[in-house]
Amino acid sequence: MLKDKVEALLEQFFLKRKDLFLLDLNISPDNKIRVIIDGDNGVTLNDCIDASRQVEHNLDRDEEDFSLEVTSAGATEPIVNNRQYLKNIGRKLKVSTRENKFEGTLTQVTDKGIFLEWKVREAKPVGKGKVTVEKKEQLLFENIVEAKVKITF
Image (tube, rainbow, N blue to C red; front, side, top):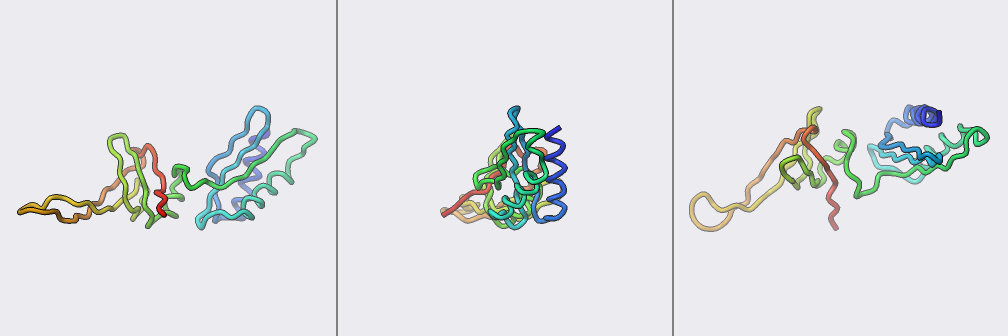
């Protein structure tokens, strides 16, 4: 089966390139292979070319006709992998849980979830005016519906 062959070839590639990892593999009924990869230090064009060659040069077009696309995760794609959280420590995230939405700096990743920190202006407990308060929230992976890196310019 084509998917099994492609998975085995990608597995060999990722054994050689431990800094890269697979986010998604999709093969359409007409054999359009789409591979999305990410890396602990980002993904270069050459990384995509190397992954593409690993697959393309080891599949026989006489057996099965296919097209192949290898891309990196886009900046607006949701975070789906624990390694993606780890590489984004220190960056601002927008996170939706089942109950709330949070926006803050990712400060820590554990086996169970992530920690976000942010500052908010709140009314002073006594007297007039506002004071800046630091907030910290632990979000469990099981409760996270979507997490994205917030792009700022």
